Length: 363
Image (tube, rainbow, N blue to C red; front, side):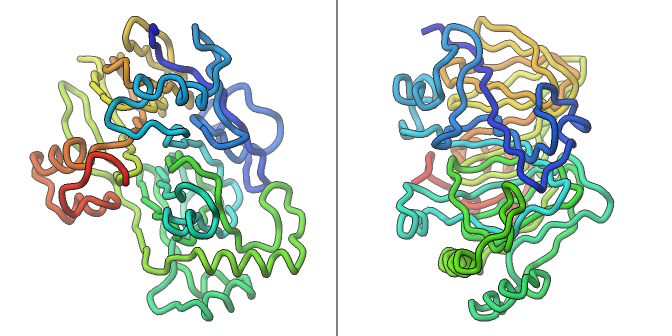
């Protein structure tokens, strides 16, 4: 097959916390009227799978490509599926997101009947002055204390409220209670899953009330899936020089995913070789992308999925792009950062699995 970069359909979620920031601040076109909370840039979630929109693969879903061409899409290092392993989104927290959590892998298998959980990371694209996020609970908070606070909807009594600044990133392990907004625009990368447990009295989809019996059951499920030990922090990322006027900033990394932000001026194009599927999202002005025999334009706030079979991408500057992938933590993350002089503590702050040499792929 003649592989090429894949433009995909992007499911849109019009939850009540959304606004018009994705259209107005990022210039994204083609969105429906009214609040837009999320655009799912690459998705293989059941019921919301992305579909190729052009080229010889037009009309095929990501799930079909995973079934028919797993090695060409993912590369030989990653397990073949059945789902594409990464989900990426733009999220508009014009209003506050619900306080919620996603199960980790062990809990998802034990309580949800799912093959894995959902660890995620947020990269802050824009935030109003004074914006904050609720991430994890304070030390010493036990299950009864958290339950009382959830019943009272008094989240600040038990949760950590962190300042939010554009350009920073936070890695959120599964089982971590969290929320962000208002006034926050995020790019999110995560495991492919939509499992979640909410603490709220109203539904995020339409703001309708949750009946008491259902709400109390939701709280019990949330408490069963909660992991109190995770207290991550926002981080500016670690920057490497990747060529003449080209900068590579590693924003976060774990066995599940890595997210990087690359910038380039006009003196030389951004060039990057890859051996696993690469999600390329444009955070800046429109750019010209070449990968394999294909050359095309990528507008701001738009995404291409680059199959592993392509192997290399060239982007003409000026460029400001996000690259998401499943890393070999030792080769792709730890080794280049150590070579650049970063210490183990700085590297470990990027996410999970970075305190020692790590396996090449998720367990």
